[in-house]
Length: 454
Ligand SMILES: Nc1nc2c(ncn2[C@@H]2O[C@H](COP(=O)(O)OP(=O)(O)OP(=O)(O)O)[C@@H](O)[C@H]2O)c(=O)[nH]1
Ligand SMILES: [Mg+2]
Image (cartoon, rainbow, N blue to C red; front, side, top):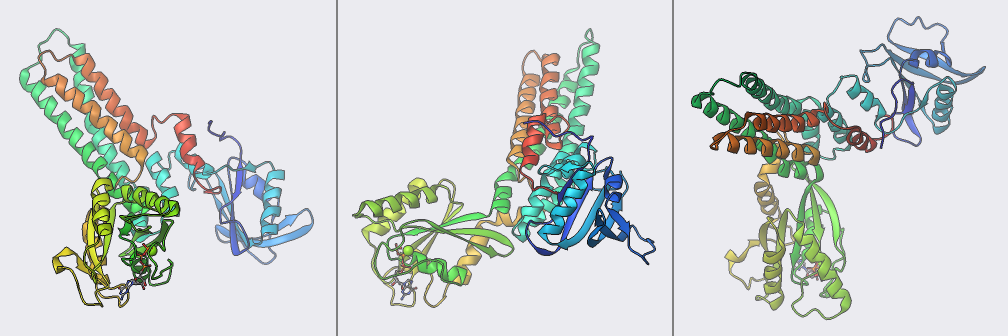
């Protein structure tokens, strides 16, 4: 993949496709003003005493629309280039006509994320900030929004840049030593050097350590509801959601396919998955296929709600559900629930949290328990948190280089040239987060995921 050129002028609709009350079209590039003036004319009586002007849009002699047009003189624009934003009526016909006018005037259609790409290339944003613009648009919960916004505002960039400054300093000291090769290096200085490298590594690891929570914040915490057939898993899902999402019946084996539903819990996105019951004596091929799907869901869960019917004594299927959960749940926390608490209990209270999908009893404590268990996710969103796998990989790479450097420095024969190599490796990894050293394919891949017009 190659990056698009930046010498020409680009145009796109910035608002979602389809009909709407308003639409914003954006033109950016060296000819943005000239192209826009080729089809915009003053509205009689408007004195133009503002940066946003009400203008008529003409296709030749035919009036197309009247629109508020904002002219941004570069570099004081989003992209850094001259930019024109046209807020016209949101009719697909009007939008198409204006875009055609722009293209006839010499602009070309913008690719995905191309305005933000220009902002990045013009130094208005670093790469981590530019990536977060995409996340900000997609953020579906308050937590995801907060994490994306703090990244757009530069929180991640500032911490990465802080670590990088320290490494640049270490590298400068090392290189000064390298030029001065006849002199012995005092042991004290070596020790100080190694400990500063270790501190930088810790800072990188600490930032990378937030990724697990960051992924939960961005994509939602995955909670899988499992248990024996007929224990009330689907009923519990419906009760948690507050509407009838899943089919419920007295027959065991009602749910076959996995079924997902998203719920906002305390400003965080939680994705509940209802699954087929784990039956100790599964009979049909269909039932077994459903159980395989359930097992797959369990292995990918962040948390598991293991449902048992508290109104009957323990069954072989309960034991199977326990076994499968223990076998498959990677690092997921398990919450045991005794459902049907509206009926006379047949199990020890200690076996789980008592709930009733029928009456709603115990649902609030269940939600609170989920929040408490995922508190790393819920807490970390308040600060800079790494939500991108690319950033995580780069931080881990930098930490790896610093670990190798430290080992070598503490070894019997520290080779300064090699040490400098490790520092340069760490530096390159950190710089790639900010986009200073990111190769074209990486940049092109990142912006290809944006919407057109952003
Ligand atoms: N009294 C009472 N009945 C419940 C409760 N929860 C579920 N049930 C009943 O238990 C039966 C099974 O409920 P489902 O929600 O379909 O159970 P499930 O675990 O999804 O079952 P499968 O999909 O077959 O594995 C239905 O008749 C529900 O009405 C509850 O809290 N109290
Ligand atoms: Mg079910």
